[in-house]
Length: 103
Image (cartoon, rainbow, N blue to C red; front, side):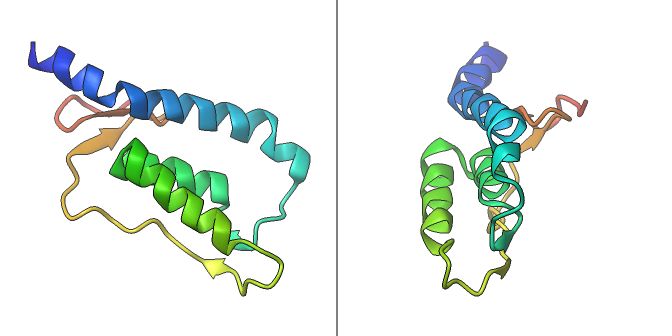
C-alpha cells in the first residue's frame, strides 16, 4: 500500500520528466546551443523537478529562464541541492523512492 502511495505522490513529477524529455529530444535540438548557462534551462528545470518536486521545480526553472537573457553573464548554474535526498532517479530520469534500486 505504501508503494502505491509513493507511486501516486511521484506521478506528477514523473509526468513532467516525460514532457521535458520529449521537449529535449524533439524541440530543443531545433534551437541549437543558445543557452547562456550550463546546464541548459530545460536540463536545469528537469533536475529541479526531479529533486524538489513539481511546484518548487517549476518555480526554480521559471526563475532560471527569467535570468537567461541577452545581457546575462551566464556560466555554471546548478540546481540547489535539497537538504535531504529522499528519492533517486532511474536512467531515464523517473523519480523513485530510495531503496528501490537504480536502473
